[in-house]
Image (cartoon, rainbow, N blue to C red; front, side, top):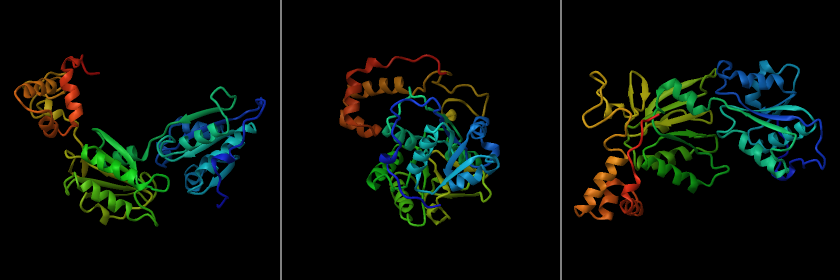
Amino acid sequence: MKTEAVTLADAPAQPAVADATMGKITLVGIGPGHAEHMTARARAAIAEADVVVGYVTYIKLVADLLEGKEVVRKGMTEELDRAVSALAAARSGKKVALISSGDAGVYGMAGPTYEVLFQAGWTPEEDLEVEIVPGTSALNACAALVGAPLTHDFCAISLSDLLTPWPVIARRLDAVAMADFVVALYNPKSGRRTRQIVEAQRLLLRHRRPDTPVALVKSAYRRRQHIELRTLATMCEADIGMLSTVLIGNSHTYVQHGLMVTPRGYANKYDLDGDGAAREGERPGRSLSSGLAGWLENLVADHAAGASVAHLAARHGLPADYIAATLAEPEACAEEGPAP
């Protein structure tokens, strides 16, 4: 369905006098697409709605819930149009479910909807109520299908440069690669955007081994689901599209028995082959001996022994000004209490 493009200026203005029949906008995250992975609250929000607004593909995913409802179908790049349509319907007194796949707040409709609302003069005190119903995001769904790749620190980066300048995306890729995050790439490739995934691979290879595990999941929990495990060096040889999510491991991620796992670090602290007791020098419920308190103690000792700030910064891969500030106030770190 093709409609005319809209801008934030097209948002319906706030009525001079609050309408007693003001409706409600519920931003619904429907999860990866299969009905079994939609929350009870998401299903209830759609059931309660008079109007359901969404991208045509998402509308199809909830077709069994739409009987007797007004349905507004929009195209791929018509996010603002969806939000404007939802606001107009809500201000006419209707309950509106504005749906997103995954989670509405993760590359979903929550952000653009609030932009339209604020542009139209809406405030939380207005009679028009707004609710967000969280859903399972693509990175969670894809991770569940391939093992446990997100057990340690991770981040998500969209490779779409339709709204974000490429240098911004490239800087983020380089930073997270250097910091050894597990990375989930959204919107990795489309019919027109084919080079972005290649550039992402190039940036990641500056800091990651070529054999770093990569999981490519297309249409998670949908009819044409496809899963492929590769390496960072070969990932671009796979069939990647807009329905794909790419999970790239960190320096400790491994694949065993067809499952991709990122260890959190228990083996550094506990004897996993024995009785699970803490290793020598470690204490359960306390930071690692190489945690902040131990690191600070060694940092101060090394500096007192003659190591320069520049040398310590290079050794630990941290900014020199951070090392200098830390050395200036080493007492700021006290041993913490038990971990939650």
